[in-house]
Structure formats: C-alpha cells, structure tokens
Image 1 (cartoon, rainbow, N blue to C red):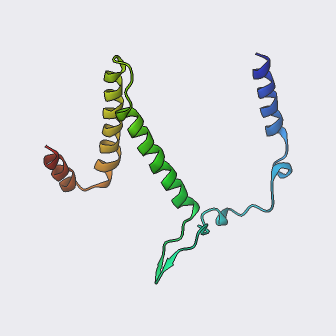
Image 2: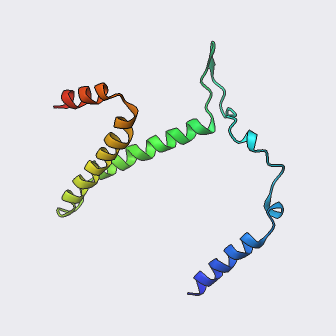
Image 3: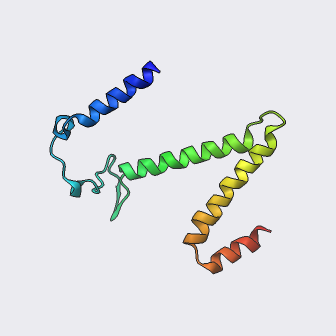
Length: 117
C-alpha cells in the first residue's frame, strides 16, 4: 500500500511540474515525421537506409516470430496443448481477418483459401 501511495505521489508531482521544466530543446512537431537515417545505405538511385521505422518493423517481426515459435513449438504440460492450439488459431484468425482480408481484394482472398486446401 505504501508503494502505491509513493507511486501515485510521484506521478502527481510529475504532472504538476510545468512542461518546460522537463523539456529538452525546442519542440517542432513538423520534425517528428522526418526519417533520419541511422545507417545510410545507397545502391545507385535506391535509398535503403535503416531508419527508426525500419528498426521498429524489424523488432516487431522478431517479436512476432518469437511468439509464434514459443506458442507453437515449445512443449508445455499435457493440459495446455489445447490452450496452445487455441492461442495459435486465434493469432492466425486475427491475421487473416484483420490484416489480410482488409488489405487484399476479394479475388485474392478466395484464391488463398482455395489453394490452402
């Protein structure tokens, strides 16, 4: 209970401070969407530089792969096999319905369903 009180007090103090006290430099919202290259890579006219957005995409892909391997490959106790399959099917269903069916045309969805079977 004491920790919670200290945490809430620290949060209240942080919100009570003026924002200029915590600011570093001048904030310009138009600069927030510029992609500054972390590692410049240029192949002829192609700019394949690694930016913050690319790093976040790689991180998301690696976490997704790790989650998939953990859920579907690692052996748990006998009772959790049903749960593991349910979690895997739920993730697949979300990817199919929320991502693929909204981004692909109807023809593409019908072809992918028939080729799977």
